[in-house]
Amino acid sequence: MMKNVSKIFSGTSNHVFLLNSNQELFGCGYNDRSKLGLGESRREEFEITKLTKIQNIPKGKIIDIQCGYFHSIMLIENENQNQNPKRKLYSCGYFQYNGLGKIYENTYEFTEIKSSLFENDNIVDFSVGYDHTLILTSKGKLFSFGNNYHGELGTGDTNDQLIPIQIELPKLRFNENISNYHVSCGYNSSFLYYSPFLFPFSNLEEDLIKLFRRKEFYDISFKTENGEIIKAHKLILKYRLNQNQNEIEKLKEIISKKSIKESNQIFEMIYSNRIINPKLYSEIKEIINLNEKNLFK
Image (spheres, rainbow, N blue to C red):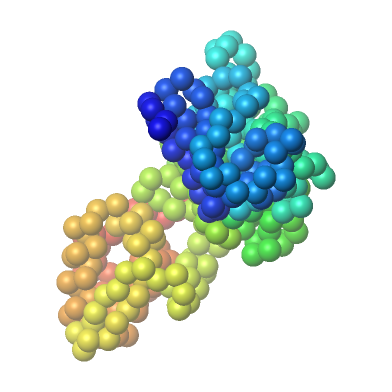
């Protein structure tokens, strides 16, 4: 039995890593495409049913590991505080699905993701999706690479990217320390957020309205005065309503007294950050002030 487990790392795939207090890393699960980083000699071993120590780990402190479907990415902090940059990313797995940040190179062990775009910049945050990755640096630059079938890289097209490419961001309202921002990858979606605000990689007003009107991905329900059901997304409501569960309960109470038409207008205001119906807005402004929460200048 493994003792002194300090962290467990998992993700969208069927493999997992465990880190102990001595900074020793172990992995188990499906090793297809060498995504456990066990080395070339074990690349044909697909089912690792026991915790196995990962050898040849880069020097430094392991901050985070995230697991994609065919790859894994590790964030290492250098022990030498005078060395710049202090944090670097390393990947292992299969290049064909574009998750490694390298050109045409299968990687059987964790090796550094090198790019002249951020070679002297610290990694503030990163996130791994099914087969795409986002990187946020201390200079406020955002990079992405991987599969772009649904436009999840934020490049404005659907072309895959084998190596990191810088993403042009809309001008944000907030000027606080970039370390307060975070990136998050879904299965085939991406977000940059500053609590309690959310920045999808697209036109906010139009795309969130489209999201509300779609039938999939709903995970919370509201009932109108006539018993009709309106479904929404907890993630969107969480950030729009100051991450406050009490505000969601207040919203449920308001919706329970409204028609289906009025309820839809309320949700469209919440999703789009626009005042569509001033009268209805006056009833919900206690829980969300749209004028004060414009996401862009």
